Length: 101
Image (tube, rainbow, N blue to C red; front, top):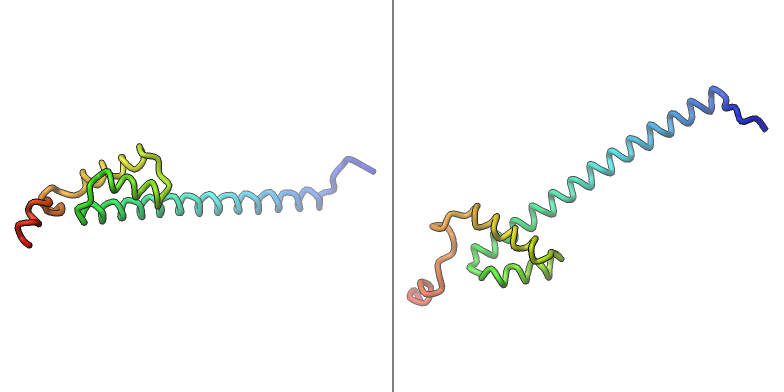
């Protein structure tokens, strides 16, 4: 058996290498898209809970429970939500709600 490859074998190997490279690029793109979609969904959930008037401790607990985040990760989403929502647009405080009822 010869260790030399034929020209056809080189072409076949080249084609397989190109195909594997394309598959790897597609997989990396899909992984990145999933990561950003997950980040976006967590951010949306955090903003929604802030809008609902939930306390930060409850939001952290829910993000940990439903999104499997560490406390520091959940806290960073809350900090982001605080910076994105102006105070005047945030949910009214508990005392203000009690007066309305």
